[in-house]
Image (cartoon, rainbow, N blue to C red; front, side, top):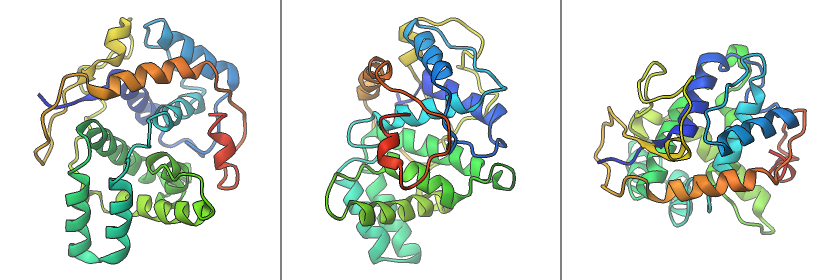
Length: 255
């Protein structure tokens, strides 16, 4: 059985695709404090919260926070360093082949979540004439989330390289990752249903993958990380406004 995507995450992504991909500043504008706290409480109570289609940004902020709470980032070591090296030292088909080989060594829960996220973000970028979220802007927002760069004297320069790598991934998805992003109308969602906490964190099997993935357990490490994510949520605060490159470190504690 292939590792799936947490239902809570999928609940957020499907809502954003249905109602948010054309919203200007999606993922750049922060959610309101109370709205985000209310969403957190609903998930902690084992419910799928009713998202407000008139207030999209809290859901987008919640999605980013989930990803930031993954220990070591979505692409951990050693793959983080290896991908950057392959990106910088090769070009064309050779580059794609090298990067595919590295991506295929990711833990399955990371690989599937990365594929799911990147194909969703490519759809967001496809609406950039309305939402202004080009691949460049999305890479600025999600680069630090996908690639965790430790504190160092060269951190800023390194992060710029990883942002460029994120943009490359977004613009070359069909060469690098299988499209396992399910359609919005897919079953196995609970948009308007009450679910237990176990249902919230359970994994949904993926379909339509164009490459073989290694076999692992049904829930895997992502379930534990999701539990930790909701517990940590209550200590996080939110602020209104627009995220910028200069405030990315500060925003880690605010979103």
